[in-house]
Image (cartoon, rainbow, N blue to C red; front, side, top):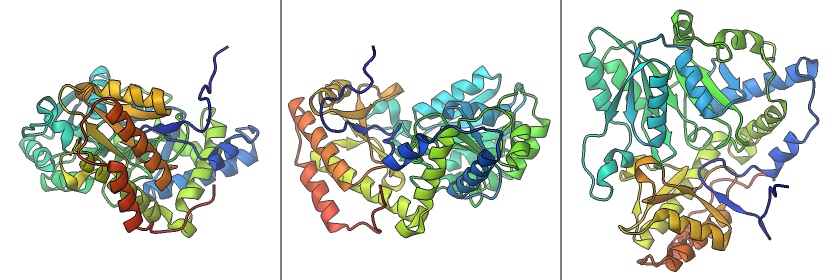
Length: 415
């Protein structure tokens, strides 16, 4: 029989940038008995989670909730708005932007992939993976598209593979400055409920997200937040869709139901997550964002003190969700990560795509606190030393000093 929990003592430290640890409150909520998804009790649950998730996305417009991963929500965003052969403009910021581009090709679209203009001494083969979206390049390309053949601009808000958070309002301004009608689609799978995201205010047409990051749930729920412009585009789109189709979901959601069998127990968890994140007693969403910024600053302080390079090269777009740690030349980051896992029961994110073997990722999101991160940094520091990596100083001590000097902005929440 497969052993599902083989960690010998204590809790395993899951410090990958998602799936993130699930709080006990959410696990307890998910353990409630499954109910009739056509009955009145479920309708009340449906209306509650739909209202809560609108607040998380900061939108007054419909939010689609799918029993799927974030990849499914990518497909839903494209399938509901595009027709075969449509052109879409995308920007390469990392592994997940690349995967979205590959999906567009498989769906029969014609994606154009813009890339960072610049060089990099630390990762010369992945310079663009250390920076955010360059909105001026998007504006330049859209101005050249005088026939308005480009139907959408697709960008990643928080690139989970690199630890870079792009400036989405700048992308919106670029589209508007070019006077282009393209839809703006944004992947904030790892950004939602970790860093400020404003679907309506920022003029986003389709926002894609998932449950297993800042929402602190297991994988299995994904989202499309919509704008009226996106809903109008879906009526003329010709790509085939059935399960992903917005129209039936929008209609049945009005009474708290879905046109198919939803993942009831994950919706229990989502209801609890919304209550936790929106709780005014712990600062609501602004408090959540402040906690993540503080955690990110502490981890980056440790990395700099170690004398190692941070994957994100631009401090203006540092992610509060995760920090990529670049290894010195000749050091296999995956070997270091494996040593840390085997010795200290600590899981760190691997390098993906162009940066595989060159860096690892420390997640600092969701159900986390100062001591969780201190233990994580201690595991990393010990593992780096055991791997023979020369460190300039103690990142653990630097992070402790940072936390001591920077008091949390709000009270702790109940577990």
